[in-house]
Length: 146
Image (cartoon, rainbow, N blue to C red; front, side, top):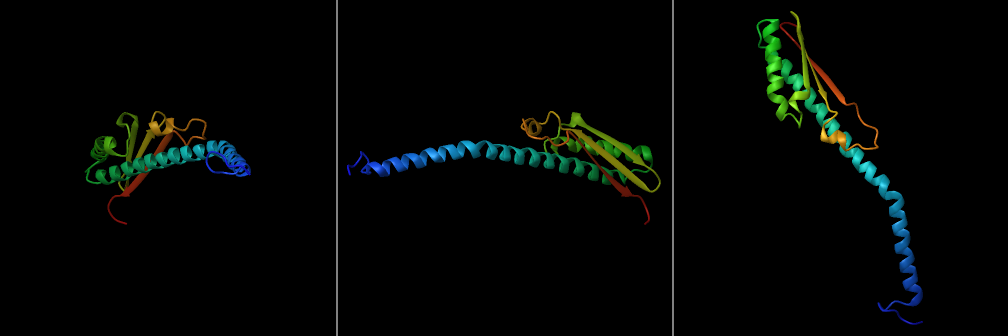
Protein backbone atom coordinates (compact mmCIF):
# COMPACT_ATOMS: atom_id res chain seq x y z
CA UNK A 1 0.00 0.00 0.00
CA UNK A 2 1.25 3.44 -0.85
CA UNK A 3 1.66 6.19 1.65
CA UNK A 4 -0.02 9.58 1.35
CA UNK A 5 1.44 12.98 2.08
CA UNK A 6 0.98 12.59 5.82
CA UNK A 7 2.40 9.09 5.97
CA UNK A 8 -1.07 7.49 6.06
CA UNK A 9 -2.09 4.49 4.04
CA UNK A 10 -4.71 4.97 1.36
CA UNK A 11 -7.43 3.21 3.35
CA UNK A 12 -6.46 4.89 6.65
CA UNK A 13 -6.78 8.36 5.12
CA UNK A 14 -10.23 7.55 3.73
CA UNK A 15 -11.39 6.37 7.15
CA UNK A 16 -10.14 9.55 8.78
CA UNK A 17 -11.99 11.69 6.24
CA UNK A 18 -15.20 9.70 6.82
CA UNK A 19 -14.89 10.15 10.59
CA UNK A 20 -14.44 13.88 10.21
CA UNK A 21 -17.44 14.03 7.89
CA UNK A 22 -19.64 12.09 10.31
CA UNK A 23 -18.57 14.38 13.19
CA UNK A 24 -19.60 17.40 11.13
CA UNK A 25 -23.01 15.85 10.42
CA UNK A 26 -23.50 14.96 14.08
CA UNK A 27 -22.66 18.51 15.11
CA UNK A 28 -25.04 19.89 12.48
CA UNK A 29 -27.83 17.80 14.02
CA UNK A 30 -27.04 18.41 17.70
CA UNK A 31 -25.51 21.92 17.57
CA UNK A 32 -28.76 23.91 17.15
CA UNK A 33 -30.41 22.05 20.02
CA UNK A 34 -27.43 22.70 22.26
CA UNK A 35 -27.47 26.40 21.37
CA UNK A 36 -31.21 26.62 22.17
CA UNK A 37 -30.63 24.81 25.44
CA UNK A 38 -27.87 27.24 26.38
CA UNK A 39 -30.03 30.25 25.41
CA UNK A 40 -32.89 28.84 27.52
CA UNK A 41 -30.61 28.54 30.53
CA UNK A 42 -29.49 32.14 30.12
CA UNK A 43 -33.05 33.48 29.65
CA UNK A 44 -34.63 31.56 32.52
CA UNK A 45 -31.63 32.13 34.79
CA UNK A 46 -31.91 35.87 34.11
CA UNK A 47 -35.65 35.76 34.73
CA UNK A 48 -35.15 34.05 38.09
CA UNK A 49 -32.55 36.68 38.94
CA UNK A 50 -35.06 39.45 38.14
CA UNK A 51 -37.81 37.69 40.11
CA UNK A 52 -35.53 37.37 43.15
CA UNK A 53 -34.65 41.06 42.87
CA UNK A 54 -38.35 42.00 42.81
CA UNK A 55 -39.04 39.77 45.83
CA UNK A 56 -36.14 41.36 47.68
CA UNK A 57 -37.52 44.83 46.98
CA UNK A 58 -40.95 43.83 48.29
CA UNK A 59 -39.52 42.24 51.44
CA UNK A 60 -37.18 45.08 52.28
CA UNK A 61 -39.84 47.67 51.43
CA UNK A 62 -42.21 46.05 53.91
CA UNK A 63 -39.50 46.03 56.56
CA UNK A 64 -38.75 49.69 55.94
CA UNK A 65 -42.44 50.55 56.30
CA UNK A 66 -42.65 49.14 59.82
CA UNK A 67 -41.11 52.34 61.17
CA UNK A 68 -44.10 54.44 60.08
CA UNK A 69 -46.52 55.75 62.69
CA UNK A 70 -49.63 55.68 60.49
CA UNK A 71 -50.74 54.22 57.16
CA UNK A 72 -49.70 57.25 55.11
CA UNK A 73 -46.20 57.32 56.57
CA UNK A 74 -45.82 53.55 56.12
CA UNK A 75 -46.79 53.83 52.49
CA UNK A 76 -44.40 56.74 51.96
CA UNK A 77 -41.51 54.82 53.60
CA UNK A 78 -42.12 51.69 51.54
CA UNK A 79 -42.40 53.59 48.25
CA UNK A 80 -39.29 55.65 49.00
CA UNK A 81 -37.25 52.56 49.86
CA UNK A 82 -38.30 50.66 46.73
CA UNK A 83 -37.68 53.69 44.49
CA UNK A 84 -34.26 54.23 46.05
CA UNK A 85 -33.15 50.59 45.83
CA UNK A 86 -34.69 49.60 42.46
CA UNK A 87 -31.79 50.91 40.38
CA UNK A 88 -29.25 48.78 42.19
CA UNK A 89 -31.41 45.70 42.53
CA UNK A 90 -30.32 43.24 39.88
CA UNK A 91 -30.54 45.35 36.76
CA UNK A 92 -34.10 46.58 37.24
CA UNK A 93 -35.25 49.72 35.48
CA UNK A 94 -36.85 51.90 38.20
CA UNK A 95 -39.29 53.39 35.68
CA UNK A 96 -40.85 49.92 35.15
CA UNK A 97 -41.34 49.14 38.86
CA UNK A 98 -44.79 49.66 40.39
CA UNK A 99 -45.48 49.55 44.13
CA UNK A 100 -48.75 49.04 46.01
CA UNK A 101 -48.85 49.36 49.79
CA UNK A 102 -51.73 48.32 51.99
CA UNK A 103 -51.66 48.51 55.76
CA UNK A 104 -54.06 48.13 58.61
CA UNK A 105 -53.68 47.86 62.37
CA UNK A 106 -52.18 44.36 62.15
CA UNK A 107 -50.04 44.12 59.00
CA UNK A 108 -48.31 45.92 56.16
CA UNK A 109 -48.44 44.37 52.69
CA UNK A 110 -46.10 45.63 49.96
CA UNK A 111 -46.62 44.45 46.39
CA UNK A 112 -43.93 45.14 43.80
CA UNK A 113 -44.42 44.46 40.09
CA UNK A 114 -41.86 44.74 37.32
CA UNK A 115 -42.52 44.76 33.58
CA UNK A 116 -39.58 42.76 32.18
CA UNK A 117 -40.72 43.00 28.56
CA UNK A 118 -37.87 45.27 27.47
CA UNK A 119 -35.18 43.73 29.70
CA UNK A 120 -32.18 42.51 27.64
CA UNK A 121 -32.44 39.04 29.16
CA UNK A 122 -35.99 38.66 27.89
CA UNK A 123 -35.01 39.87 24.43
CA UNK A 124 -32.57 36.94 24.11
CA UNK A 125 -35.41 34.40 24.18
CA UNK A 126 -36.07 34.51 20.45
CA UNK A 127 -38.00 31.35 19.48
CA UNK A 128 -37.92 29.91 23.02
CA UNK A 129 -41.01 29.77 25.24
CA UNK A 130 -40.75 32.95 27.26
CA UNK A 131 -41.29 33.27 31.01
CA UNK A 132 -43.98 35.73 32.15
CA UNK A 133 -43.12 39.33 31.32
CA UNK A 134 -44.82 40.74 34.43
CA UNK A 135 -43.02 39.76 37.62
CA UNK A 136 -45.17 40.47 40.69
CA UNK A 137 -44.13 39.65 44.23
CA UNK A 138 -45.42 40.67 47.65
CA UNK A 139 -44.37 40.65 51.29
CA UNK A 140 -46.36 41.05 54.48
CA UNK A 141 -45.01 42.17 57.83
CA UNK A 142 -47.08 41.97 61.00
CA UNK A 143 -47.28 44.99 63.26
CA UNK A 144 -47.24 44.53 66.98
CA UNK A 145 -48.18 41.34 68.86
CA UNK A 146 -48.58 37.79 67.68
